[in-house]
Image (cartoon, rainbow, N blue to C red; front, side, top):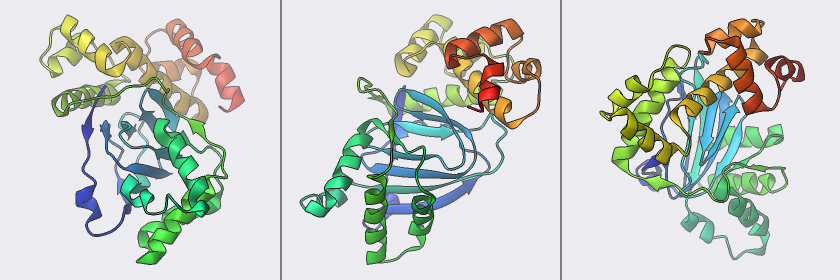
Length: 280
């Protein structure tokens, strides 16, 4: 999938790095990248997180460190998640270079190196989350010290890589606009009928040309991607509602319960019933 370049410099102004919180009705699918590191904490919301070729669910408390030039997005347009919010911290390699020769910063450099594929911190201590929430309110030198403290604290936390090491991003503003349009359409309509013809017409392509376009940029087929989104929705309903599996299948866009069970098992390695019982 081709990503759009996001310009962080206009947000930074005269500060050394960017740190801000925001609240929106939902996270819109916006596939983008930038040369800065990004630390994102989801303070409210649940949905789908895409980092490189990693497609995973996220929920409140989701904490991810993303390396430079790595495309990413958080999206929950089709999840009915309601109001969503996050804290975002973005800083450049140039900022880090100012401290890179200090022995005291060795652990920080290791954390940043691991973030080249994206790092997810599933069990980060609440003190780190609190420090991240406070950072946008700090001024002057306190901001810099607070950020370094957060990064050092993360060096002691278990992390999971997100994108595969073989992932290679392609970037084009025009293609990013087209694929964002298609992916938003899928997010919004995933619970209903989505046809290949509808998706292709959105970007004025024939069905065959669209299939090649989608596969080239998403590294997966159109139908498989739609199923990924639907299964992600189903996982949230299985954990957050008392609906039956049949109802959840229908609400997630699957007309056949048998097909839903088969796709769910293929994607998650367990049946919907087993997934619900495990609380995964």
